Image 1: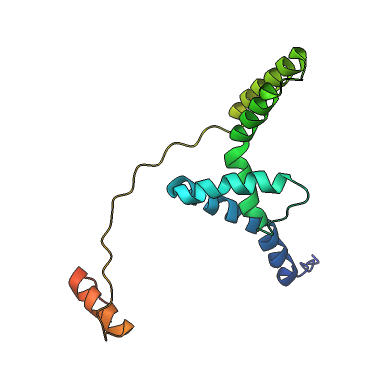
Image 2 (image 1 turned 45 degrees about the vertical axis):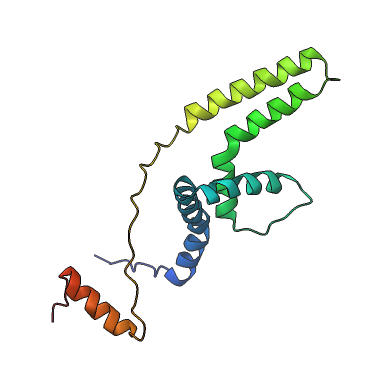
Length: 154
C-alpha cells in the first residue's frame, strides 16, 4: 500500500489573511459593547454614522468602528430620514406616505433579522487603588497582592 504525502499547509500565508478578515468584526463587537456602557461613545456613534454616509467626509476610522456605529444607529437613521421627509412642506403627500411605509417596513425587517440587544445593568462604582507616592510598580503589585490575599505560586 502506497502512502500519499500530505501537502504542507502554508499557515504563514493563511493566518495573516484570517486576521485581516476577523479584525473588523472583533473591533465592531468591542466598540458596540463599549457604546452600550459609555454614553460618550454612544453619542460618538451618531457622529460616525452620519459622517460616514456623506461621500465628501472621511473620518479615516477603522472599518470595525464604522460597522458598529452603523449597526447601532440604523434605526435612528431611518427615523431621521422619515422626520426630514415629513418636515419638507413642498413634497407631495403620496411621497411622504411612501417614505413612511418604506421606513416602517425596513424597521420591521431589521428587527426580524437583528434582535435588540438586552440592556446591560448599571455597573457599580469601583474605588481604584493607586500607587503611593514614591512606590515602584513592583512594590505596588506586591502590596496589592498581599492586601487581596493573592500570591504567586512559587
